[in-house]
Amino acid sequence: MATTNEELADFLRRARAAADPGRAGLPADGRVRRVPGLRREEVAFLAGVSTDYYTRLEQGRRIVPSAGVLDAVARALGLDGAGRTHLHHLVGPTGPGPRRAPAVQRVRPGIHQLLESLDAQPALVLGRRTDVLASNRLARALFTDVEAVPRRQRSYARWVLLSDQARALFLDWEVQARAAVESLRLEVGHDPDDRAGRELVAELSASSPEFRTWWEEHRVHQRTFGSKRLRHPVVGDLTVEFETLTLPGDPDQTLFLYTAERGSTSEQALRLLASWAAPATGAGPGRRSAEDGSAREAAEEAT
Image (tube, rainbow, N blue to C red):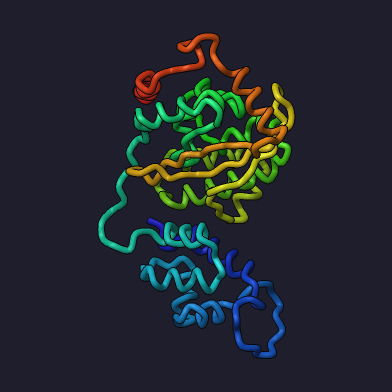
C-alpha cells in the first residue's frame, strides 16, 4: 500500500505554482519571488492552517483533512469548481468505510425514448470516464456512429484523441481534445481505483503524445456548456452550442444537448443533416427502440 498520495501531491504543487500572488490579497513582505506562484507558507496562511500541516498535505501524506479545510485550501489556491471537486476526490472519503465498486452504468429506457424523440437536436449521454452511454440518430450523424464500435471502447475522450475522423471534424481540435483530457482527469480522480479508467489512461498515454503532455499538466475541467466548430463531410462548416443536464437519480450520467443559433447557416446545416440522417420510413434502420438499446447493451456486457 502506498504511503503517499502522489496524485494529490502533484495536483497541489501545480496548483500552487499556477496561483497568482497578486490576486491572493497577501500583505507585501518585500521578498523577491524566485519561483512562480505562491509559497507554501502563504497557502497555509490563506487557508488558516499551519505551514507544517499544509506541507504534509502537499507531500501527499496520509492525513484526512476535513471538508472545511479542503475548501479553504481550494480558495487559497484560487481553484474553480472543477478544481475544488477534484481536490476532494483526490483526498478521498473523509468518513469510514471502503470505496464501493462502481456499478455498470445503464441508461433508463425513458432516456432512450427521449433521445430518439429529439429529431432536430443532436443529443447524447456521457457517463464515467467520458463513456458514451447513449446517443440519438442526429448525434451519431454529426459526430460518429458510436454504436458501431464495441461498448468498452465508447469513450468520447478516446475517440477525440485517437480518431483521424475527430481531427478532421473539429476545426478547433486542440481545444476540444484538451478539454476532453481535462474532463477525463476529473472523472478518473473521482475513482482512482477504477480499473477501466486506469486502462483507458494507459492506452491514451501509449498512443497519443498530446494526451501525455496534457495529462501531465494535471488540469481539470467540467463541461457544463460551450460550443464546437465543425467541418462536417456532408453539410460543411457549422457551429453548435451545447448545454448539459445531470440526470436525476444518477449524478454520473450527463445529458448533452446540441443546438445551433436560430436563423444561422449552422441551423440550416443541422436541418440538412437531420434530413440526410432520417430513415426512409418511420421504422427504418436509423431508429431503434429503447428496449432494443437495452438488449444490445446487456448482450455486449455478457461478452
